[in-house]
Image: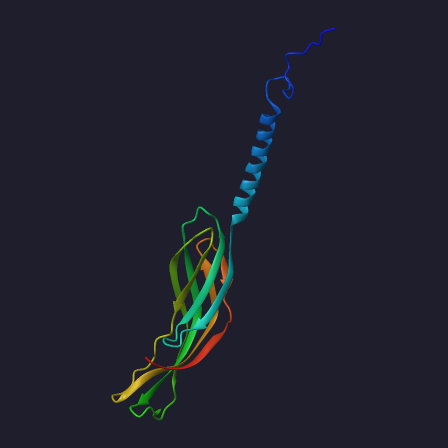
Length: 180
């Protein structure tokens, strides 16, 4: 008795598609769904941190930040820093003494600073500075104006997507003695 084999090859269903082709189509479909879900999750802007400090040479508020979830198609993003600022100014004579009179305060005043930052791998890190508030006084002849203290409150960073984050510490202040 002779064995007979059908013309249908092993592993091929009727219709001509091989099991390998079916597996490839299924794997491709799953990979497409996973990649689309990953892209959707990557485009979820949020700040990781926003840390305030005061530059001891200028009295300016410096806010360092990291913004993530910006997506891999974004190459740069605008970031804005907003804060309310107050400052105390004082005139000093040539000997470094305060003449009679009360130091003059400035503010609170709203300050805004912004910049464009490069985005790599869906995130950016940088810092922005604002302030200090300008002096409300000028000193008479023979005296020099100094910035003696600053305070910043209500400090927020925001990006062009509308994402906003409260920077800390807030309020932040410093006692200084900087020629103005």
